[in-house]
Length: 427
Image (cartoon, rainbow, N blue to C red; front, top):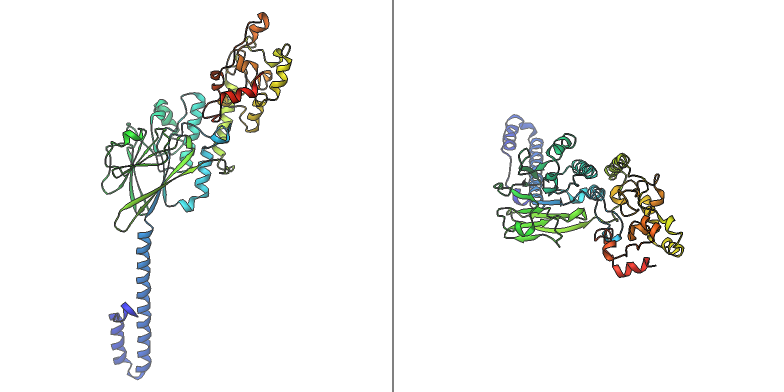
């Protein structure tokens, strides 16, 4: 019986004495009863001890916390999908990954370092609202209020925060500077104020300063920045882990902290890419579908440009340039608008601009219903407005690399190589 050999409950001893005095005739039976009770008591104590030991071991071994972080989302609700190499990111993929892996990730805190908003435009505000829905629905524990958020007027967030519960932290008046959390044995202070560390807590700073500038800050256990820098992983400065959130949600940061029985903490970090291998469900796309619907309404409300005073369309060009038409029809430019139809983005102004002729310009494309002749990337997309050329045969613009870079950006077309791509459309 080991540790428990000499352990007898005094209450059992008293029962034994009373049994001898009051029940002499049943001595043998009484003694057996007491012995059985003693055995049960010892077994109970052993079980309790084992449970306490297991609990203590579990506490030591289970002192783990994951800090799951994003930042610098920059209003990018989803990738454009123009190239497989840049097909990463999107709030639907982030939401889906967190939902599917909830159990294996727990216990965790979920934070965003800020700079999540879109631009201060009608469409940009719709993006910001979608981001707020996302942050609220996934129950982020803390969200930084950074530079891109401050571009929007103060009353914008005042109104939206009545609809969506988002735990902002900011040094600005009207917002909390810090939030206090407790998770799996970790007491946590998440703050936006570089001066507001808390004694005896795991201190996490949300900021938008650069990693280099973060090196100068003292007293923080973890600093997460939304500076927009792309790094291979966190840096360590003194006893501080400095992590730059991967821009546009292309990777989720997962920082795992392990605390030993002496309270010492070590960490491991990994990036979780948000590629198209993360299957989006109808549930995770709900916010995006709502955004697309609102953008479509916004498109209808836009002022229609004055009718054809400039752009002529490919049909006018073919009267003299028939051979060139045949060559163009075999390029991806000729089906550029169809690629938007395939992904449901025919009403998204930001997508339309590089898939039609003269969008938002006088006499340019307005909608597929009103200006179907200006859909796709046509002659005038690259060579410039052609109406004057029809009357006096004045030279059209030559195609240069800068012509292509208006749409073939690093983000949308990371494999763009001007000489190679020029050969595909040369005529």
